[in-house]
Image (cartoon, rainbow, N blue to C red; front, top):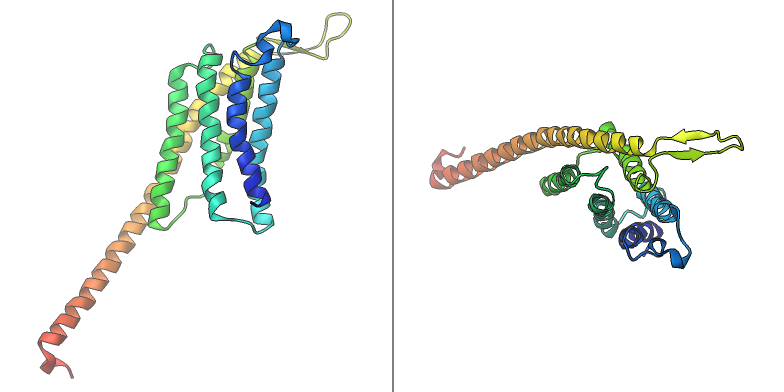
Length: 234
């Protein structure tokens, strides 16, 4: 097991950890255990951010160390889909004010659509590179999940409070709502962009396949004619 694959596995392991942290069984839900006041949200946010960082780190290390493997190519997209799917399913129950079920269905449905198109593309012998929209989606995705988790405890978060009651106020709930809706819009746009790119490739692939079949049939026909009428040769 090389280092990039180990990092990818750590992202998969973060999924049940995140589910446990945001569940009623987590110690932060029991004042007698000594945790109260947003610790649960902060820990969950930290776990998700660290897991998101590993998403780019494992691919970078695999390319840098020339350790791209079949196992890694399987685990990396699996880890991504598990992380996103689990995060939004949990948030529907954890903070329904910010993440209604229909938004989770759209975002998760987009992930399944892209996975299906990638499988078809691989079977046809081509790949579709991630677009700038897809990269933007990843950034908004991290912001939306983290802010939705934090908005469970804070509507407004006072940073750097002063003795006179001043400080920098962060509108956590507003950021979470905007990020979730932007995430939904960008997910739809990126899915459409991915589908257009897929359709262009599959159209060219189908045309090449038809050309190859036509060429093969022509050669076979010529061989049959040559076998049936050998006197025509020469």
